[in-house]
Image (tube, rainbow, N blue to C red; front, top):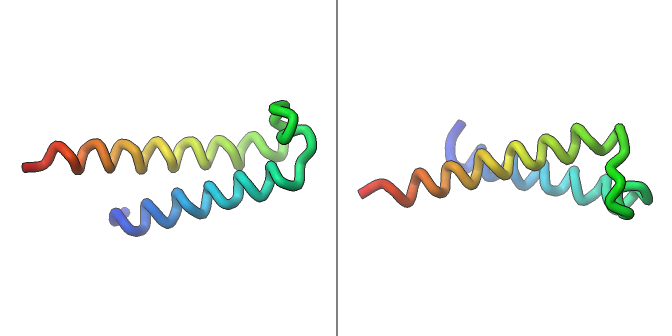
Length: 61
């Protein structure tokens, strides 16, 4: 996955997560619901992948 594709996937996962939280009272109360759990997990996974790519990119000469 290219750097741009990874960033876009990260931002799409962020949008899905925040959209879900905006519509879910349980998630708004820090009580993630069953429907939101995979959405939030996908966001965290994409965020971790992006952060790793950024850290790795900084180490290049």
